[in-house]
Length: 151
Image 1 (cartoon, rainbow, N blue to C red):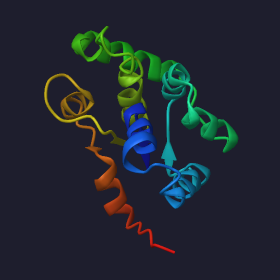
Image 2: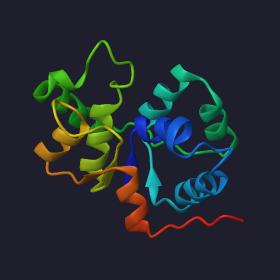
Image 3: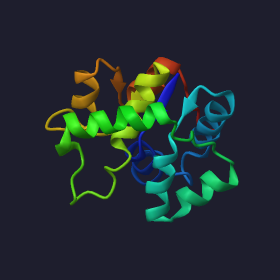
């Protein structure tokens, strides 16, 4: 199973798989959420609310479930923030969910999907520190063997 970060949603929606061009991609994503194979922590939704665009509307219309933050996830996220304080950068509004995404992955033995690039103190580097598998959207699609065909 997988947990996704906010950049995966945003980059997918606005750059990689624009819904007007790739509607089947978003049908597939909804199916994965419905099956419980793809998860997202509640903090991701909170970050999406700051953007308040068509993506948030899509999440609401498709009843995308966002996992509540448990006490154990909160404790793990606090440890991650303490161990990796540079993960939270004031200049980036999409970082507040990062420790929760990683904590969610640790607690649920999940694979993190992110479009963040390795290096510096970003999700991939912190996942590596905690021995959490971290992949990008392309790798996720390859692993799931998804294919979209032109109609």
